[in-house]
Length: 168
Image 1 (cartoon, helix red, strand yellow):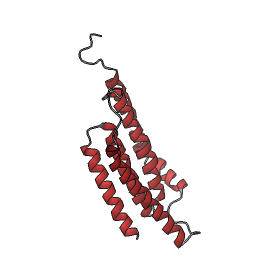
Image 2 (image 1 turned 45 degrees about the vertical axis):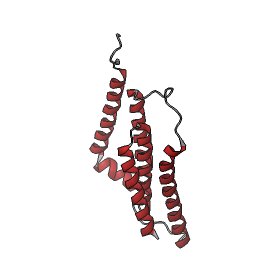
Image 3 (image 1 turned 30 degrees about the horizontal axis):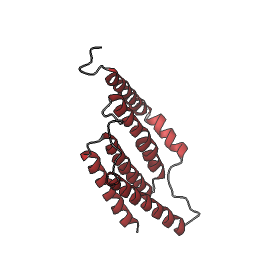
Image 4 (image 1 turned 90 degrees about the vertical axis):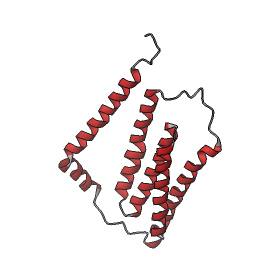
């Protein structure tokens, strides 16, 4: 059963990523990318890596996608007052892929708890992961935080530049 769920989630991740690449509207592309990242998180959970799955959802699908939305808003790529509300057919692929990912996660959780409800999966403790992350890879963590800061400053700079055609 887990192998079937893995292949379903892998297909969802690939399809959502292709839709994200091919989407013209940036907010829709971000929604497809979040769907792809959530599918990857369920795959990590399926591979007995719940901490990596939580990082995938919290860091990538949460924080990074919010940063992308912030950049899109700062670049002023569209005017919502000029657009029409999306038709249900535009929501259908994202809803369908998200429903498959959530149903797969529910199936994995139910099958794991039905098999052994009182045993925890083996793995590293959170304290050990934190120690390794900040003691052994502290420089990499700081470099990534600086990259995010530079991206934010760049988005602010690009968003504050006057538009062509303005005399100001």
